Image 1: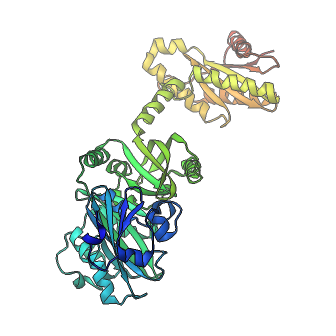
Image 2: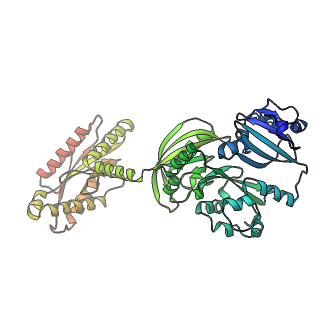
Image 3: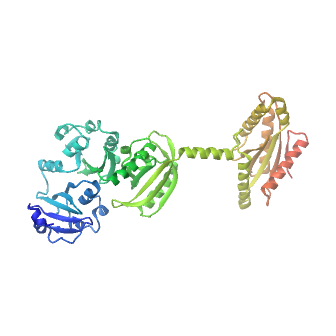
Amino acid sequence: MDINDNNRSDLPVIVIDKNYNIVDTNKRAEEVYGNIKGNKCYKIMNYYSSPCFKETSYVCPINVVKQSGNSQYTGLYSFGRVKSKYVLVTVEKKGDLYVQKHRILSEDKLDIPDFKKILDFLTEGIVVLNEEGKIRFLNRQFVSIFSINGEPDQFIDRDMSFLTENMPKEIRDIFNKSESIKADKEYPIHYNNSYLIIKKITLDNKYTLWSFFERKETDLSDEIFRVLLETTPVGIFLQCGGRFMYVNPTFASILETFPGNLIGSSIYNFVHPEDKEKVEEVVKKREEGRKSTEKYVIRIKTEKNNIKWVEITSESIFFKGENCGIGSVVDVTERKRLEENLRRLATVDQLTGIYNRYSFEKFLEKEIERAERYGENFALIMFDIDNFKQINDIYGHQVGDKVLKEVVDVVKNHIRKSDIFARWGGEEFMILVPIKDKSDAYKIAEKIRKKIEKFKFDKVGRLTVSLGISFYKNGDSMKSIIRRADTALYEAKKTGKNRTVVAD
């Protein structure tokens, strides 16, 4: 390629390969920049030690063409090498090379008419808003991207909502959540069979410039990838610095909202307060650049204030000069509900709703370990309903079941929160009682006995219970302490029932 023959204009022309090497220049480029062939473009133009996207949020024009699928791109730049001047860069892809034409604008500050002409010439859609959200500038590409009827100037000084009311919700949400969108970051969002790369820039602390670059999906592999992202039943997200940079529709639906409503927002807005610490640990690892794959289950609060359980698998990546995290999200609310039901079935007596024998034995094992290690004292109160077989024989099992529930209700109202109450089997029950003094257990047992004796049961009238108490002794096993409580209960039955007996 003879660059001087093919480019007769006075504009500097630079040819760059896909690895950012400057492979050729025309005479005008040599006059402006000197002998720059053989150097990396990012080193020459901005004195960066690595590609622009790794150093800053600066948009590399070559990358824009690479990623967009378009053959040409025009953008307005301010290069470190050409200080205090604007450079209008047009880059065109030719084979494996990228040809850049530079128009260096001689004035340090452009007057408004010239500036508007340049912005109208850009490939990006631009809208500039003042502090009140009024439109101060709109270029033609913005009007084209969003299929807005009318000339850009007719919308000057109108409220931005005038335009957004006819836009899809994902775009409206971007403007509605303006404060949560971080400046100088790129946010991709799917729109109208394209990706829009959205960027917000603050000007003089009183104007907000929004840039929308349309990435056409002409490549088949890109299209397949997009379809997979947009239709997969798994939620996909990209987060940097604790904020969402990209979410797919599935992830947004899990949070019961729209993708545009999430872009730029803090991930902590949706994390259940009790699980926030777990997420903070993962984000901290990402920001510190620690490479890891994390898999964890947390609760989230959706846009509609519903609580869901999600399983997240995330990976550390380096994206746009930042340590970020990309991951998948699966709604496991139903699975957690089933697990909880199974856990409940395994630990709770289905008739009475108190602990079953299996779970009580687990509590007792832990209490024995604690007593051995720390010298804490506890007692077992074992009791059963006197003459319960007669109730079943006379009134039937349905009435018998109701009696068991009523007994449980009476006992629950007269034991402490620290006491563990369980159905041992049939009409037998156990209470694990942490104590400081042995008399505490006897007082609780007697209180239960008297309350049941005075209670009027439906259908059957008055009932009594017999109780046996055993206290923990050094070296006790679960079997030995239960055996002593059972022996004491047997003694209470044998000596007349409706009484409490303490084991030796």
